[in-house]
Length: 195
Image 1 (cartoon, rainbow, N blue to C red):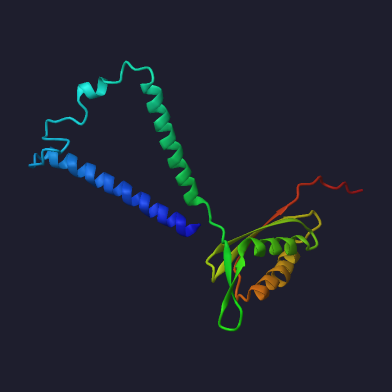
Image 2: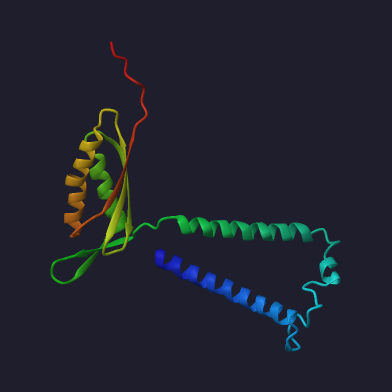
């Protein structure tokens, strides 16, 4: 996913840059009164980008302004979608596992996430766990969000997470290290009345 996103970004940025350079060059060439070919859209410094006739051609058509507004709205929505995609962290789809015989196997990222979630959620005091794999195939990283029950100790929970769930995942995947970012939250509950 990240490779595809990078390629799409490069192609879109390249096209946008090429269009801006060509249009900017055409306007600059006309503005400084360079000799330009006959097919060039602007012929000199006194030429305008849109003539009065071009600006008023569709003015009386009832469909024109709704079509322009809809097209611009679609462009804005696509630009916002593209911007939001840039900030979304890509999840790792697969992890390379060293089999010990010089070969490598591929482990599905969702499978490893599922096992880590189940292992973390089975710990005492953990109400729910959510795991996301990021990083590279050969060097994965994890982000774990734990929802703790009221009686849970954060220190004990983190200790159990690192010695149990993460240690099992490292051993099973043959990873020398599995850097992890853990976020802990407590379940909302009413305060207990003390007599």
